[in-house]
Amino acid sequence: MKKIIFNLFLVILCSHLGAQVQEPPYIEVQARAEKEVVPDQIYVMIALFEIQDGRKSIKLAEQESKLKNIVKGLGLPLSNLSLYNAQANYGNINNWGKKDVIDRKYYSLKVSNAETIGKLYEELNKIYINEAYIYKSEYSQKDSLLQDLRIEAMRKAKNQANVMTRAIGSKVGKPLIIREQQEYYPVAYENAMMTKGLYETDDDVSSNMSESMEYKPLKISLSVYVKFALD
Image 1 (cartoon, rainbow, N blue to C red):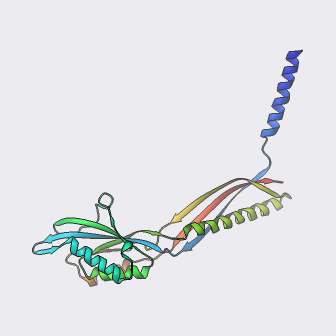
Image 2 (cartoon, helix red, strand yellow; image 1 turned 180 degrees about the vertical axis):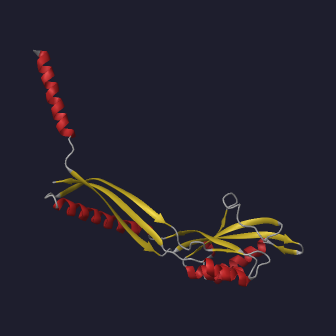
Image 3 (cartoon, rainbow, N blue to C red; image 1 turned 45 degrees about the vertical axis):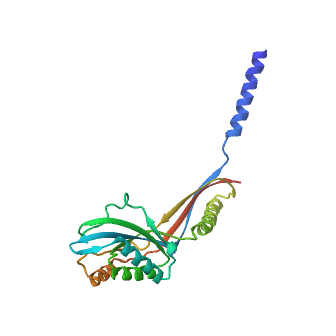
C-alpha cells in the first residue's frame, strides 16, 4: 500500500513540475536603431625620422620643436600631443625616399575636426615632418547616444510585436528576454594619409592629399532582440 501511495505521489509531482516548466506563449522580434555622427576626437599619427643624407642632417629634437610650434599655432593644447610607442605596431611604416634613417619617434595628436587636419598637413608639408595618417576617430558623446538608440530600438521592437499580434487577436505582455548588440563603424576620414619623400615637393604632396582626403561620418548602430510574452 505504501508503495502504491509513493508511486502516486511521484506521478502527481511529475505532473506538477511539467506544468511549471511549460513555456507560455511568446513572440520574438528584432529591431535596429542607428545614427550617423560627426567624430569630434580624431587621432593623427605623426612620424618623425632622424635622417643623415650626405651632408644633410635632420635631427629629431629639431623636428619635435617644430611640431610643438605647429600644434600651438593651430590653437591646440600641447596636452593633445603625446609620444606614441608604436615601434612594434607601426614598424612597417613607409620609409621610401628616406636615406639612412638613424632613429624615429611617433607622436599622436588629437584634433576635433577635418579643417584642423587640413591645416595640420599644410604646416607639416612646410618642414621635414613629412609623414602622418589618421589611425582612430571617435565620438565623445557615444554613451549618451547609445542610451537614445536603446530607447528607439525597444520602441520599434514593441511596435513591431503589437502589429504582429493584433493580426491574430492577441496582446503583447511583458518582455521575457532582452539582448542588445552594438555596432560602431569608425570610418571617418578614410584614406587620409600624408607621405612625402625627401625629393618630393610640397606641391606634389598637397595635390596627393586633396585626392586622398575622403570624409565619412561615423555610424553608430544598436540592435535588440526581444522575447515578449503573449497575454
